[in-house]
Length: 476
Image (cartoon, rainbow, N blue to C red):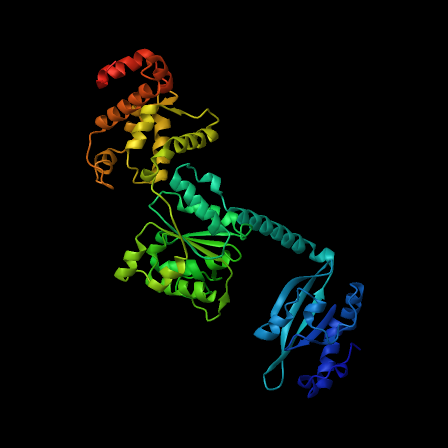
């Protein structure tokens, strides 16, 4: 006879103790082993076979203990709480795999008072094909999870944000300080200035650096799907929803950083829910009343004018103040033209590396063209132009002609000509000649009008220097 119900003072069993003991005897004879728990998860009955099995695992006197103390991976408590059976399952007990079934227990009034689990089989040879398949799937899942985790680590550090200008040095200094605190960071700047790169660097240098870095481009997600992408959803939350539910970015970023790019495009309805995440550290998936606690850091970025949007009622003022704790202004490329040579050098090395070739060089004239252009697309546009140039260049040195050919015609006519911070319309040839004239005059001034030394500084032949001076009207 298994350990008797007399050993446990549970009123739910008393009214039919004799009938239950007879039923349990039947289970005891037909199953490998079995046990029962009450609604609170406490073991109220266990078969002799189960006791023997547990004794081999150095687990003694299981009766009266909580089920998880005896069987750590048991799902019996779940069955008791949901009142739904798990009719067939594979469970590891110690080093053995077992075939199990779990059912809820109801009294004569239909009230659930516990659950019962049965080990139907523990014949390793019989279960071997199924166990082998499960272990293979678990290994594949672990491998996939490791790969996924690696893709969610920060890809860039502060060293990847290239530049030596004063504005870049100050930006990186403030970003380093921002990485050391937990407050939200708001990155402000035009498209292509490197806001996402900077977000990666801040995450990597923070205390959350070993956690996930999850990115969500608000502008790239249709408005009707954004809430689900952000908060996740339960099964059947709406027509067309994932049948198994969906984890949102807030769950994926737990313990790490959530980067919200182009947050200025976030609809007002979602803004109010994001505010709750920032204030209360909790949210509800779409279609669920269950509140989920979250532990993450928000880094947001936008190319839009948020203060104006707040004034126009397109962005919540309270959310703006919550996000604007540590604002970092990322300067456009036209405001740090002195970084163009080192940016070009870095980009050309990056382009050449996968091709296994030496990086292209850039002539001074080519750099002058780059410095004269306004770069509305900023560093991203510079990278695209140089990539285009390298496919068209006829020599290993990129010339002004190569760069001019790679720049979009509409960009030359509109972007250079558009008044920006006091600039005005000027022909491209005039800009090139002025840059060359200034370079030659500076070289002559530094060398005391020594043509040989000046040509060395300018890295051109003495004959070419004389030709340039003549064509530009510079006195010999």
